[in-house]
Length: 487
Image (cartoon, rainbow, N blue to C red):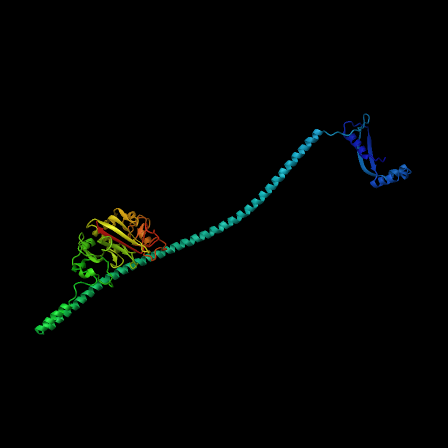
């Protein structure tokens, strides 16, 4: 049968199969077929209601379309067949619980989705960091290889540089030896020249005397007059006028500038040596210059420059730097005996300085001048050296002056040279600072270093002529001098 209200019929059938009010039929199989007409057929039926009444029942059944087919299994019916026509009421509490649980599951799903997105972003960052770490590791490995190569190259360069320095030191020592030999030959040559000159003059006088013997009395007087004129002067032009035959006993290697003119005191001074320059001043000689001194404690002669125009005079100059004309990178023996030029740069000699300071109590004055013309000084109220057996150890007193105290740090220290290392440093300070000095570890002052022109200098080592309290260790001073005087 065709029915227009088929949803209600479906609900009835569902209630029969699902509810507990189901009735049992013996060996009964229900085959229900619900046929519903197409929408077009329904509309057409409403439009032509009169014509549809004339159709027969068979044709009416054939015109429909089967939309739902239900197969109900055969069941044994034991009672009446009941049909519940009331709609099933849903449990509101269960629905609410299901909805709440569904909502919670949706919220958890959203949270999981958020976590998943975050973990995905973190995974991307981890992959990026891993890639960057791999690139950094490769770069670090490359840099390590380059650094290792540079270290190997620098090590090889250091070895080569050490070899070059050793060669330079050997060459310097050889040059110093050659220079010493040359000076000795020069001395011998000077002695021989003097002897030849004396012999020539003696021969000339003998010839004159022989010629005068054959002449008359008047001619004899003329010959004697000529003899007086031709006699050599007693004062040699390159030595002070107080130089006598005892000057042959001089042992210091300090020479006077042969091109310089003799000073005034060389022409008019006395004829005997003095103890020191203070003795020269007390004797009336007030002009600065070269004087011959006799060390009473050692009975030896030496030449020294006496400074009579500064700080009340009477100062015996034991060291002077002014133009870089003398190399102060010398051996122990040269620093012991002295070297240089009395009219310029020179070092008096440690042995002479030791015997000189044994005569009385002396004070030390260090005069300094920079390249801007500023002059300062440092004085120490006592100064003397220990003997060579104690490596000419320095003994200083209290400081005063305006240059700053850069020498007291060297007090009680032994003298060190290129070939005698007596400093407190692991290496040789004289090698690094290119001079001889009372080095400690290594120096606050280095007045026997390399004379650099212009003040500030660039060097691998701090080897200039410096006084640390006056312009620092990287400034090479223009003029320095060390002088002593009895207190």
